Image (cartoon, rainbow, N blue to C red; front, side):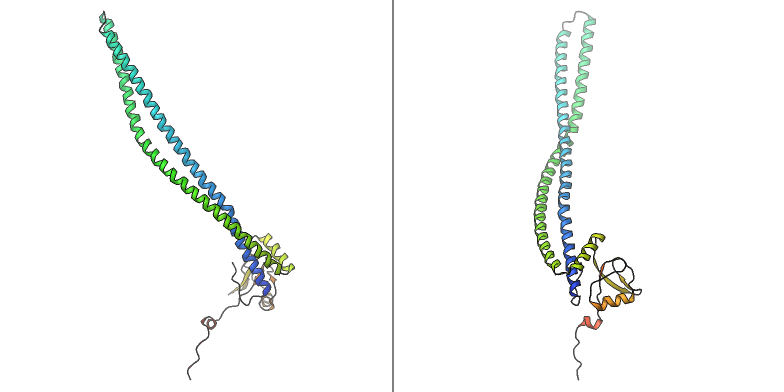
Length: 261
C-alpha cells in the first residue's frame, strides 16, 4: 500500500487513494471468499471424525454380537453335554459308552474354544470401549468448536461485506475526482497487470528504475517525472509512476537550536 506524500501531485494522490482502496477491497473480497472454504474444510474433517466414530461403534457392536453368539453356543454345547451324560448312564454296551464319552469330549472341546474366543473378544473390547468414549468426548468438543468457527465466520463475513460497501462508496467518490482520461488508464492497467498500477520510481547506483518492471528510466523522462507534477507512465510496463525525493539527514533531525553567541 502506498504511503501518500505531502508533496505528491493532486492527481497522483487521488490515483494512489484509488489503488489503496482497491487493494483493501481485494483483500476483503478474498477473505469473504476464503471463509466458506475454511468452514467447508473443518466440516469435512468433522465428517471424517464422525465416520471413524461410527466405525468404532460398529466394531464394538460386532464384538458384542460375537460374544453373545459365543455365549449362546456355549450354552448349547453345555446342554448337549448334560443330555449326553444322562445317556451315558444308560449305555448298554462299551461301544455306546465310548461313543457318548467321545461326543462329550467333543462338546467340552467346543466349549473351551468358545470360551477362549470370548476371552479374546473381551480383551479386544476394552481398548475399543476406551477409544470410543474418548472419541465421543472429542467429537462433542469438536462440534462445539465448529459451531463457534461457523458463527465467527458468519460475523466476519457480514462485517467484511459492510466494510466493502463503505469502501465501494469511498472509491466511487475518489474516482469521481480523477480526470476521465487518467481513470480510464488506471482501470486499463489494473485489468491488464492484475497488480499494482501506481509504483515508485526508485534511484540506485545504476540510475532510476521503475519498481514495477525494474527497467531503468531515461534521464529526460525522469526529469519530467520529477518536475512536471503530471501523471506519467513507465515507458516499458505502462504503470503510473511517482517519485519520492530523498530526505536529507538534517531534515530528518528537524530544526537545530541556534548557536549561543
